[in-house]
Image 1 (tube, rainbow, N blue to C red):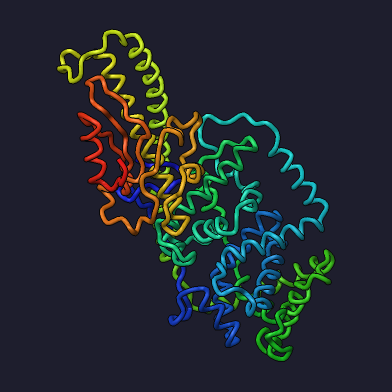
Image 2 (cartoon, rainbow, N blue to C red):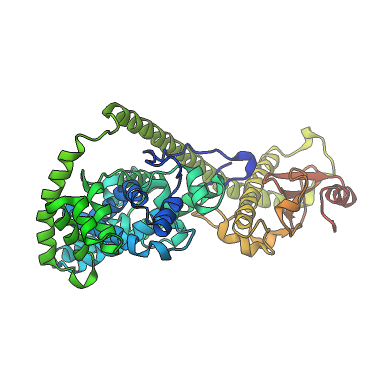
Length: 503
């Protein structure tokens, strides 16, 4: 039984296929951003900084390009961001998630450029006003291109942890295993954080009248992360950024870039400082950068590079993985819709069952009737009610697991603490806190046999149409079941054997 935006219990998890990180390292002895950043900050390794630029230029340039709407301005913003990274490398916390940091820095720099350009500010204001006008929801999923103009505004509302997860998973194209390694969690928890962040983005769009689905958002983010920076930009940014940070001397810069290239890099470094970041300088920089790109592109033709066939194969594999994730998300949402419909029907059947019991109160069957003596309508209603209860108690089991995963494996002390982790429903949840009581308050790691240990149960037992005492239970492994007992003593004995100290 799966839920949107939540981590399912261990016994019913369905792993999603991961995104490939793409590319390969130029230095075989370094495998991650932290090591590259350390080498540059501590040892002054310029090749390590150049590799960081190569890895994350597309993410930074694409974010600036989406916000400013101008490729030249996006190039300027990318220069500024990597210059800031070069200056601040020594002071960044050890566990900084670099894609998230770069994305946030690119957004801030791009917004600053937008504020200095009245025409773009007016266009952004019109776009925001349009986003708040009432819209008629489409009959089918929203096209990806309708989400892109507001995507960065929605990402800005996420917490740092959720934004890091999105930047790693979609904008940087990392697999779930790599996302988990970067965030210091396992792949299942990383998947849960990504799904939770997608759900929060979906609610943000929903509040503005845009009917976005989680799978459409995932496709939009993947498309945003696939945007490619202009050719040659990766070759110019490292030198300009290192020059802006003061790690290269004037003579070294001139030697590296030669005459025209050196003066362009120094101009970029000067533009990167806040005091001189003005529109006139930007226009001049664009002209020089175009000439620089032409020179770098000409030089790049003689350098070894990946073959076109290899790139096409990598793109095809990535597209296939994305399609598999998309289909899985569609299947899960369809299943959730069917489950919600079942719960609605079960609630109606419960009302019918209560009415039938009131009608037959004076002619209730004796305990333990034969199957042929049962009222078929009442029996069918009770069966549907039992299924609805089991599904509702599974929701509570999922909420307790999600709470524990966010609180050091500790189960909640009260059900009210776990309520925020319940799957969202259009109708009120059929089982409230007053109908459920916790029977275990500790850590999941302390439970030896999760399949036979009860962690919560229905507060009051009820009598079935067969005259049996029934109660719904939630087990530590996430499943739920209804137990029918002949007497209270039999029920207490059964509960005591499954971890309940005071049956």
